[in-house]
Amino acid sequence: MTALDRRSFIKRTTLGGAGILLMAGSGRVDIHARPLGANGDIRIAVAGLNSRGFYLAEKFAALPGVRLVALCDPDEEILQRQALPLEERFGKLARYKDIRKLLEQKDIDALAIATPNHWHALMAIWAVQSGKDVYVEKPVSHNIWEGRRLVEAARRHGRIVQAGMQSRSDPGVHEVFEYLREGHLGRIKLARGFCYKRRASIGLAQGPQPIPASIDYDLWSGPAPLQPLRRKSLHYDWHWMWETGNGDINNQATHELDMCRWLLRHNRLPEKVTSFGGRYGYLDDGVTPNTQIALFEYDPPILFEVRGLPRAAADPAMDVYRGVRIGIVVECENGCFAGGSGGGWIYDRDGQRVKQFVGDGGEGHLANFIAAVRSRDSRVLNGDILEGHLSSALGHMANISYRLGQSLQQDALRGGWADHPLVNDAIARFQEHLAANGVELSATPVVCGPTLEFKRKQELFKTDTPFDMGYWANQLVKDAYRLPYVIDEKA
Image 1 (cartoon, rainbow, N blue to C red):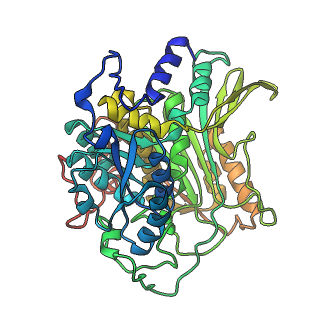
Image 2: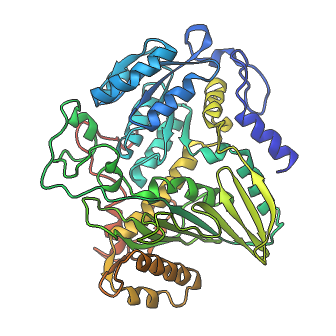
Image 3: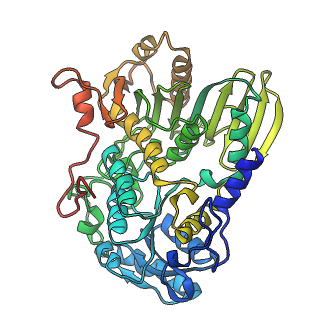
């Protein structure tokens, strides 16, 4: 990292004292920009408390000059259970089931969102419309269209909106990316991303399941269709249903997709995308793929792999690629980098380790958000909402290709990529992985999505004839929202 880049990063990441409000690039103090909490504290609320939200509540409340004041969750059992230990440490907290009631409160300056994906963009847009700054976990949207609306709303209402992509605040990641961009390994040829994360079966329910009495199911469903619960667990397993989640390529993998795009300075969406895979190894109520490959046609390209099954049927460990299980591998002319958030290693052409980079996993990301809230300058953010939108949209694009795919036999899949050695190599390893898990390749098809061309300015897929693949892809760019949980065209 150059001295200038290092100074810029430290300036963005460092949380100053409670009374110091630095305006980016000017060094002046703007006392009129300060939120109007008691003693100048930034008063923050957290929505979605089952897991990540509780973590955010603890971490934000521990920052200097930040006061946790309210919690929101449509599951009263979770709301009360999680509120008690927080109140023991941080004092009495207001509790809400309905986010709309929380957003009516004028004594809340910022909202942290850790709800299911289908609520992220709508809740964030409502928050900025009510005059609040927002920290929203990844993916920042459930579809491409609403992600762009969120960016526009943040700009229109002049609010600070940070995407929860913590790698953006990891000094080790900044350093290794500068090292690679400076050409120490020659030209960058390809960025690979990996999410090899165990995902067991969620089970097979026998018909509609009862909704727990503690949950306001209408509020929980929000903009998603209100329909019977057809899985054993309402919570967390929503990740594997299209109506509420996006699979692992837009769950864990959003972090790694973001690092790939950020490293390569791809400040736009790709011209083409293709994705294929399936849900293998068990029969359950989940519908998103647990094994997936996606190619994003940039120059240089991004190639991503998702695996939810273990290394082999008799081996509970997960696969690795050049030592990486969850992270990135950057292929260069004279070697590669393998690692991710928290650091990694530079390898030479012979596969020998030559240099290590160490990071902290982005520990300063929440403090960076608070610093930007104080400064009232979105340039202070390490993970501005525009970056969150673009990286989330990558996963959405891959899923759209997959959802439009047709079932092919495994040998036909390899034949279709004979002229693309990078993809063919990934397919070969994909098939070896399935075979090691006892999946009979000759009898098990793969869902092969079409290669879709994308109009980056309009953020729509290219369509040449009525009802071609581009037309159907565009039907998945935006959700069919349920009243009154609707995002306006101009939020």
